[in-house]
Amino acid sequence: MSIADLLWRFPSVQMAWRNLGRNRVRTALATLGIVIGVVAIASLGMAGVAIQQQATANLGGIADEVTIRPGVDSTTDGVTDEQVERIRDVAGDAAVVPQKSNTTTLTARDGQEAFVSVTGITQASTLYEVSTGDNPDRLQAGALLSNGTAQRLGLELGDPVEYDGQLYRIRGLIESGGGGFGGGNELVLPLSALDEDEHYDSVTIVAADGDEAQRIADAIETRFNEGDEEILSVTSFASIQENIGSFLNTLNLALIGIGSISLVVASVAILNVMLMSTIERRGEIGVLRAVGIRRGEVLRMILAEAAFLGVIGGVVGAALSLGVGLAAFEVLVGDATLVFGWASARYLVLGFGFAVVASVLSGLYPAWKAANDPPVEALRG
Image 1 (cartoon, rainbow, N blue to C red):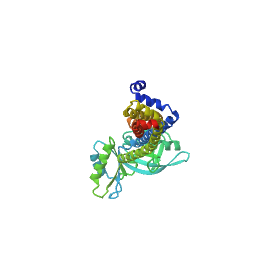
Image 2 (cartoon, rainbow, N blue to C red):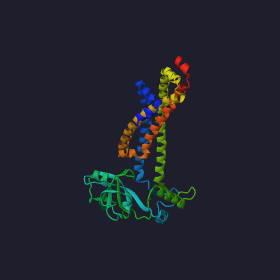
Image 3 (tube, rainbow, N blue to C red):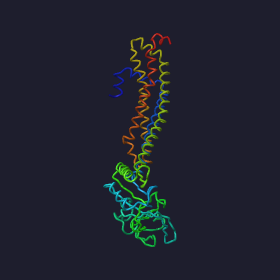
């Protein structure tokens, strides 16, 4: 049904639409308040979703990992082979990667130095992604080096690096991370390159997903740590991601609450506009009542005016909010099309719905007052 059909079938709606055009400046200002409220709610909500998706993407690569290190009550200075085998039993099909670590300083031909963390590992491809070169499933010869370190020292694939008096040729370049003693500068060597001691500095488990990683972490805690005793320290990044997600959800609700205040203020403005409008048209409404127009028709007319304000303001506000959301997702996530997902688009629906409901509620009292004003008193006024 078009607006023209709606106006023709319902005279009260037609009169409401006409009345809004009587004082266009006042109508525009009231609508502007609704627009600002909708933009505040929807854009803040979508920005919160963009921030949450960015945080999830940043943690997505480690959310399925569990890191195990010696606990404070461990009788050894590392994770033993026996403990690794027991961990494999608990982990099931998940990849279990023992690691040894150290630090060293690499020196370029021109004398420039770089402090790096050294990781001894066999299953290199499980934990590292190589941007250039080879990333073997079993690293038994050669080395992997952080791309940033290689650029700083002028090293390329095939160049040798020295560790503990031995030379290892660079087989692949990995993206520089943020962890390790080297501050993201990392040298990955075969496990045999580090101390032959049977103890490992850490063990990393890579599960199918975050839920599986959390299940494995809980099972290892139960298997190795009894009561307050901590033989192995178990860190699950899935729980960290869950905590961050919970915090961001709370932050999002707070942002929406702040945005809702502006819409409440706009509702007060609409209440004022509708009261002024009914006072100015008191005599006209009295004539309508005197010629037989029922109270319900007057009530519908005033409520229709308020609803029109909410619909117009909601549509314009949602359109502006969509533009803000597109920009936020492009900047924070790098993919503006994600704004059309339900997690984000629902805030457009929420803002529009809130605008219409708040407008109609603001029109209830002026409509009731106009509908119940005695015709004689209204004409005399």
